[in-house]
Image (cartoon, rainbow, N blue to C red; front, side, top):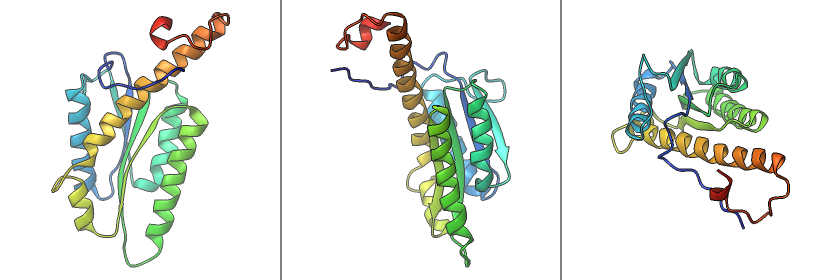
Length: 180
Protein backbone atom coordinates (compact mmCIF):
# COMPACT_ATOMS: atom_id res chain seq x y z
CA UNK A 1 0.00 0.00 0.00
CA UNK A 2 1.23 3.46 -0.85
CA UNK A 3 0.21 6.38 1.34
CA UNK A 4 0.48 9.90 -0.01
CA UNK A 5 0.44 12.98 2.18
CA UNK A 6 1.24 16.58 1.58
CA UNK A 7 3.33 18.54 4.03
CA UNK A 8 3.95 22.12 5.07
CA UNK A 9 7.76 22.05 4.82
CA UNK A 10 8.75 21.55 1.17
CA UNK A 11 7.83 25.06 0.03
CA UNK A 12 11.12 26.37 -1.34
CA UNK A 13 10.33 25.94 -5.03
CA UNK A 14 6.53 26.05 -4.98
CA UNK A 15 4.69 28.72 -6.95
CA UNK A 16 1.26 30.04 -5.94
CA UNK A 17 -1.34 32.36 -7.39
CA UNK A 18 -3.85 34.14 -5.20
CA UNK A 19 -7.05 35.39 -6.82
CA UNK A 20 -8.65 38.08 -4.69
CA UNK A 21 -12.11 39.62 -5.04
CA UNK A 22 -12.28 43.36 -4.34
CA UNK A 23 -15.96 43.28 -3.35
CA UNK A 24 -16.38 43.04 0.44
CA UNK A 25 -12.77 44.13 0.76
CA UNK A 26 -13.09 44.70 4.51
CA UNK A 27 -13.39 40.93 4.92
CA UNK A 28 -11.33 39.77 1.96
CA UNK A 29 -8.38 41.97 2.93
CA UNK A 30 -8.22 40.22 6.30
CA UNK A 31 -8.36 36.81 4.62
CA UNK A 32 -5.52 37.83 2.31
CA UNK A 33 -3.34 39.06 5.20
CA UNK A 34 -3.78 35.81 7.10
CA UNK A 35 -3.19 33.71 3.97
CA UNK A 36 0.04 35.60 3.25
CA UNK A 37 1.13 35.20 6.88
CA UNK A 38 0.50 31.46 6.70
CA UNK A 39 2.48 31.10 3.48
CA UNK A 40 5.33 33.25 4.84
CA UNK A 41 5.59 31.31 8.11
CA UNK A 42 5.86 28.11 6.11
CA UNK A 43 8.79 29.40 4.08
CA UNK A 44 7.08 30.90 1.02
CA UNK A 45 8.39 34.26 -0.17
CA UNK A 46 5.38 36.59 -0.11
CA UNK A 47 4.94 40.21 -1.14
CA UNK A 48 5.40 42.61 -4.03
CA UNK A 49 8.86 41.30 -4.92
CA UNK A 50 7.99 37.65 -4.42
CA UNK A 51 9.04 35.08 -6.99
CA UNK A 52 6.74 32.49 -5.41
CA UNK A 53 3.38 34.26 -5.23
CA UNK A 54 1.48 36.12 -7.93
CA UNK A 55 -1.70 38.09 -7.27
CA UNK A 56 -4.75 38.57 -9.47
CA UNK A 57 -7.39 41.07 -8.37
CA UNK A 58 -10.93 40.65 -9.69
CA UNK A 59 -14.03 42.82 -9.17
CA UNK A 60 -16.04 40.25 -7.21
CA UNK A 61 -16.27 36.60 -6.27
CA UNK A 62 -18.23 35.72 -9.41
CA UNK A 63 -15.16 36.53 -11.52
CA UNK A 64 -12.78 34.36 -9.49
CA UNK A 65 -13.26 31.02 -11.32
CA UNK A 66 -12.56 32.43 -14.79
CA UNK A 67 -9.33 34.14 -13.77
CA UNK A 68 -8.24 31.20 -11.61
CA UNK A 69 -8.79 28.88 -14.57
CA UNK A 70 -6.60 31.01 -16.82
CA UNK A 71 -3.87 30.97 -14.19
CA UNK A 72 -4.16 27.20 -13.74
CA UNK A 73 -3.96 26.63 -17.49
CA UNK A 74 -0.75 28.67 -17.65
CA UNK A 75 1.10 25.76 -16.05
CA UNK A 76 3.07 28.14 -13.80
CA UNK A 77 1.43 27.35 -10.46
CA UNK A 78 1.52 24.48 -8.01
CA UNK A 79 -1.67 25.72 -6.33
CA UNK A 80 -4.13 28.59 -6.52
CA UNK A 81 -5.88 30.25 -3.59
CA UNK A 82 -9.23 31.91 -4.28
CA UNK A 83 -10.30 34.56 -1.75
CA UNK A 84 -13.65 36.31 -1.64
CA UNK A 85 -16.77 36.90 0.42
CA UNK A 86 -20.37 36.49 -0.65
CA UNK A 87 -22.75 37.84 1.97
CA UNK A 88 -26.50 37.28 1.80
CA UNK A 89 -28.58 40.33 1.01
CA UNK A 90 -32.27 40.97 0.45
CA UNK A 91 -32.48 39.19 -2.92
CA UNK A 92 -31.67 35.76 -4.35
CA UNK A 93 -28.48 37.15 -5.92
CA UNK A 94 -26.44 35.59 -3.08
CA UNK A 95 -27.69 32.08 -3.89
CA UNK A 96 -26.72 32.35 -7.54
CA UNK A 97 -23.30 33.87 -6.95
CA UNK A 98 -22.32 31.53 -4.10
CA UNK A 99 -23.40 28.45 -6.04
CA UNK A 100 -21.71 29.40 -9.30
CA UNK A 101 -18.45 30.40 -7.64
CA UNK A 102 -18.27 27.10 -5.75
CA UNK A 103 -19.08 25.06 -8.86
CA UNK A 104 -16.65 27.05 -10.99
CA UNK A 105 -13.74 26.64 -8.59
CA UNK A 106 -14.38 22.92 -8.16
CA UNK A 107 -14.68 22.39 -11.91
CA UNK A 108 -11.43 24.16 -12.70
CA UNK A 109 -9.51 22.05 -10.20
CA UNK A 110 -10.87 18.89 -11.83
CA UNK A 111 -10.30 20.18 -15.36
CA UNK A 112 -6.75 21.40 -14.84
CA UNK A 113 -5.37 19.11 -12.13
CA UNK A 114 -4.08 22.16 -10.27
CA UNK A 115 -5.10 22.32 -6.60
CA UNK A 116 -7.43 25.24 -5.97
CA UNK A 117 -8.25 26.34 -2.44
CA UNK A 118 -11.83 27.52 -1.96
CA UNK A 119 -11.39 30.57 0.24
CA UNK A 120 -14.66 32.27 -0.56
CA UNK A 121 -16.71 32.91 2.55
CA UNK A 122 -20.45 32.46 2.07
CA UNK A 123 -22.27 33.90 5.05
CA UNK A 124 -25.69 35.18 5.98
CA UNK A 125 -24.41 38.36 7.62
CA UNK A 126 -21.44 40.70 7.57
CA UNK A 127 -20.89 39.85 11.24
CA UNK A 128 -20.45 36.16 10.38
CA UNK A 129 -17.97 37.06 7.65
CA UNK A 130 -15.97 39.30 9.99
CA UNK A 131 -15.88 36.54 12.61
CA UNK A 132 -14.41 34.12 10.05
CA UNK A 133 -11.90 36.68 8.87
CA UNK A 134 -10.37 37.73 12.12
CA UNK A 135 -12.51 38.36 15.18
CA UNK A 136 -12.75 34.74 16.36
CA UNK A 137 -10.34 33.13 13.91
CA UNK A 138 -9.10 33.84 10.43
CA UNK A 139 -9.74 31.19 7.83
CA UNK A 140 -7.21 32.85 5.53
CA UNK A 141 -4.47 31.08 7.50
CA UNK A 142 -6.04 27.69 6.76
CA UNK A 143 -6.45 28.54 3.08
CA UNK A 144 -2.70 29.17 2.84
CA UNK A 145 -1.86 25.92 4.61
CA UNK A 146 -4.32 23.97 2.47
CA UNK A 147 -2.68 25.31 -0.68
CA UNK A 148 0.77 24.25 0.52
CA UNK A 149 -0.40 20.80 1.55
CA UNK A 150 -2.23 20.17 -1.71
CA UNK A 151 0.68 21.49 -3.79
CA UNK A 152 3.15 19.15 -2.07
CA UNK A 153 0.72 16.23 -2.26
CA UNK A 154 0.02 16.59 -5.98
CA UNK A 155 3.73 17.05 -6.66
CA UNK A 156 4.44 13.69 -4.97
CA UNK A 157 1.71 11.96 -6.95
CA UNK A 158 2.90 13.47 -10.25
CA UNK A 159 6.44 12.38 -9.45
CA UNK A 160 5.30 8.80 -8.85
CA UNK A 161 3.35 8.76 -12.11
CA UNK A 162 6.38 10.10 -14.00
CA UNK A 163 8.75 7.56 -12.43
CA UNK A 164 6.40 4.68 -13.17
CA UNK A 165 6.12 5.85 -16.78
CA UNK A 166 9.87 5.45 -17.30
CA UNK A 167 10.29 2.47 -14.94
CA UNK A 168 7.15 0.36 -15.37
CA UNK A 169 8.93 -2.65 -13.87
CA UNK A 170 8.76 -1.09 -10.39
CA UNK A 171 6.47 -3.10 -8.14
CA UNK A 172 3.18 -1.48 -7.20
CA UNK A 173 4.24 -1.57 -3.55
CA UNK A 174 7.34 0.60 -4.03
CA UNK A 175 7.31 3.25 -1.28
CA UNK A 176 7.27 6.84 -2.57
CA UNK A 177 10.45 7.58 -0.57
CA UNK A 178 12.37 5.15 -2.81
CA UNK A 179 11.15 6.86 -5.97
CA UNK A 180 12.72 10.24 -5.28
